[in-house]
Structure formats: structure tokens, C-alpha cells
Amino acid sequence: MKTLFSILVILGFAFRLSAGDTNAPASSKTDASVPLKIGTGQADQYYGREMIVTGTVAQVTIRPKVKFLNLDQPFPNSPFTVVIFPGTFIPDVEGLKGKAIEVKGRIKNFHDKPEIALDSTNQLTILGSTISTNSMISTNAPAIPQPTNAPPSLEATNLTEIL
Image 1 (cartoon, rainbow, N blue to C red):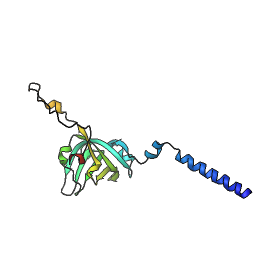
Image 2: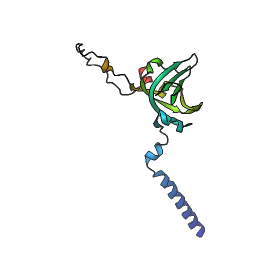
Image 3: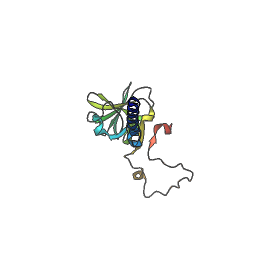
Image 4: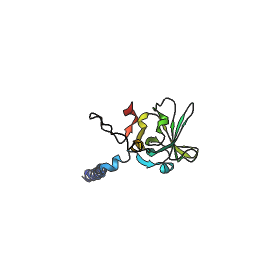
């Protein structure tokens, strides 16, 4: 009888521990699976981790076998670099200069500088541009009517949506 009682107490205790784990808030469980969004200046603190890094493309460098997007400052002062190897199609890479972007991926340390190498266009999202389109409109020009069937504009555009 004592043995049966001991087994029930142990099982009850084990069940209580496992039930306590399942009652944890859902946000604490999912937060670990969702990458954090950080700026380029923080990226060197997260080597080896999957993160979302935001910044403005300051320089685009195209080499025969690789393309580089230096964020926030040109090379060699850039705090973060996006590396695009052949086989990863990014349309109009040169057109990204001056655009705010976010890049998702594992941060790697290359020559003591953080970088993310793109494997897919899904890893890069264009957030906006530092150039205002309103500054290019002449105040003396007649107003151009806007089409009524124009699609709604999106604040952020994923490159796969363009393709």
C-alpha cells in the first residue's frame, strides 16, 4: 500500500511539473522562435543567431562572383554587410542604394564584421527610400489625376511580391 501511495505521489508531482510548463504564456514560447529585429550597430552582438537587421543601403558593390550591400556607411566603415552570391536573384541591386531595408538570416562574422549572406529573395524586404518623391514634383505643374483603380500602396514591399 505504501508503494502504491508513493507511486501516486511521484506521478502527481511529475504531472504538476509538466502542467506548469504547459501553462506558460504563449508569447514566451513563440518569442524564442521569432527572430529579433535589430539595427546594424547591434549585429556584432548576435553572431550565429537568426535575426532581422534593418538599415539603409549606403553602398552597392558588384563583383563578378558576389554582390555586397553595405548598410548605413560605405566600406570600410560599414557596420553591416549583406552578401549576395550568384544564384540568388535580386532584381535591380543597384536600385537599392538609399533604400531602407531589412534582412533576415543568420549573422556571420567575416573579418570581425557582421554580415548575412542571402540564400533567397524572401530574406530581403524593402522598407522605403530616403529620397522623397514629393520633392521631384514641380509646384507649377498641373495636377495629374490619379487612377481610381490603382492598387493600395504597401508600406513594406517584399521582393517576391514584385516578381
